[in-house]
Length: 211
Image 1 (cartoon, rainbow, N blue to C red):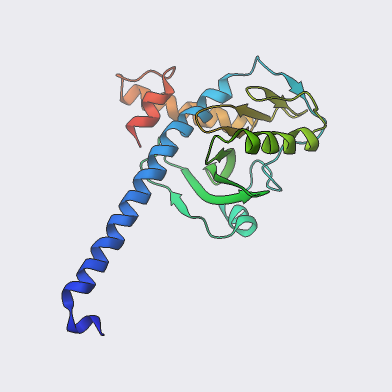
Image 2: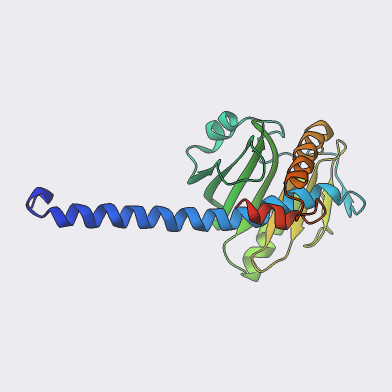
């Protein structure tokens, strides 16, 4: 049966697709709001490091400073791209639904001026067995047998991995590119001057306002 015979059917499908996209957009925007704030906060937490590693920290085979094009070449087409309603003008985030050793997760990569500066893997459930398997991947990769959740790993360049046992466990990868962070902080300071109700020390408020 052709939809031309039933015009209301095509309208219904169109509305359904639009509703699905809006729900999807709202989900990723809400998720991103919290993690944008986390990225800025993690950069300030430089004093506490539990472990050091001789292996360079990168996000899978993606180096910090890699471009969006590099990420798409490695990971394929994203499930969602956010480049609007973010705190910084030259910022965008790629989202992927991913399975790592059978563990379902959501991957996000944050770019500023087309340079990767923050990435995160968030498990989609709080299953203790899957958490242990996931943690062991990092123990083996960096030869850190005592590594545990809620700890931090730092490489010789200052890049960090932060393991957080939260409602949904997550692992964050943070660049130590100080020139890039100086540019980010400069832009954030400018935003604070324009919006004096928000403090640079309360980055979640800044991120949530733009998300």
